[in-house]
Image 1 (tube, rainbow over the protein chains, first blue to last red):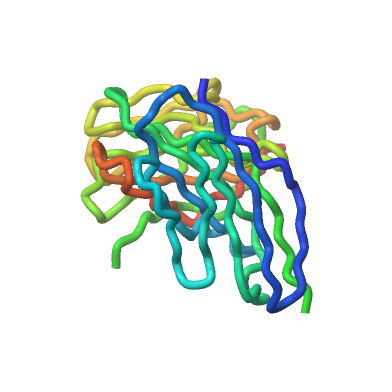
Image 2 (image 1 turned 60 degrees about the horizontal axis):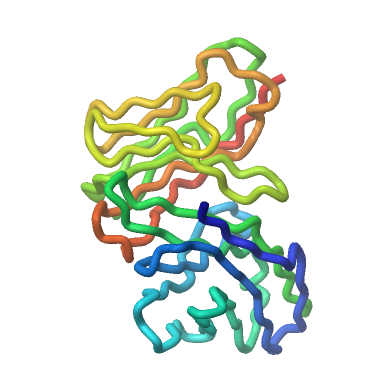
Length: 116
Length: 114
């Protein structure tokens, strides 16, 4: 069975500081892809960053970067220079490409509050 | 504009009254799916579809039906809604067989069943 665990239900960070959201997953597959989604109060689901499991290099998108540790099955998200607009629920997810479709598995989310 | 359109955004209904939540995408995506989001549980997949006339159950299919008669549309049907189906629902789509292709989500439907 595939699982995604986000062990921090809530976090807060001061504006302009750096915060790291943790995510671990479990799969016996070797070919998969990892994502972080952001859900602001508007409830829209927005893709933040993606990572191919076969790539060693950690993905970066502006102030967002990941620390991907394949052996440890860990995929944490680092947000640098936090802004008020980063306040949102963050979901970690991974997907497997199977014969029955691209199955997506989501964590339970981390609610991040950026404090002015 | 590439998007997934979900309607309605809010829906309040009573137990047992059939309802349909519509979902349409304009990106020619093969893969479409429905999720429900509940506090503390994250997103759980209800049904998914790989292409026209191909659908399969996700993790929580009980009480739901879907159909995929056209590539762009994937409606979610609740034949006899119950209060435990009160939730936030998302439709999503992506390119099939390109696993790095992320899910594109609709804006969600907040359903309340009384």
